[in-house]
Length: 204
Image 1 (cartoon, rainbow, N blue to C red):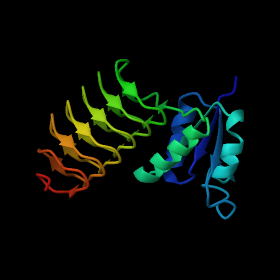
Image 2: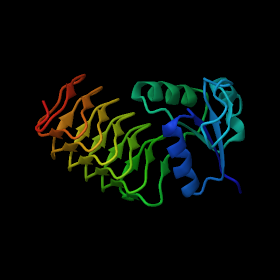
Image 3: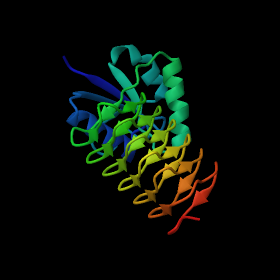
């Protein structure tokens, strides 16, 4: 049987989701983007219409997801899809390692060479990007983005909508609040309250 996936958002993040989905056994990919018809292709896949067309065609698809990198927008769009009765796909690249004892929220994606270890809990719409590691007992709230090459040590908590920049490192037991931005290459040694941007080594 052909597995069909609708992806809302035809930019770069959406392309990586499509590639990951195909590697994971999906066979039919359909893109939707609110820039259509101006945006008719993302360079590899055709765009079939706007979000309205996706909502009309939900019943014909096995699952849908949101390929938008901005955390707040992704959360909004995933919530709208759920309210419309959509089944949200959770997609894990076959070259990623996700513990059978980890919990993956609907609409989350784990890209190639990433690791999600035992007893981690990921909320809806999380991104664990290429080569990132999320060690044991971490808790990621909805729509957290863990960028490529990030390393979260054990028992780290990350609040809703936070962005952990490329190559950042977070010490074990640290709590990062909601809507936090951690700069590229930062080393986070202490808790970070909601809404802050931190950077540097150590992060401040």
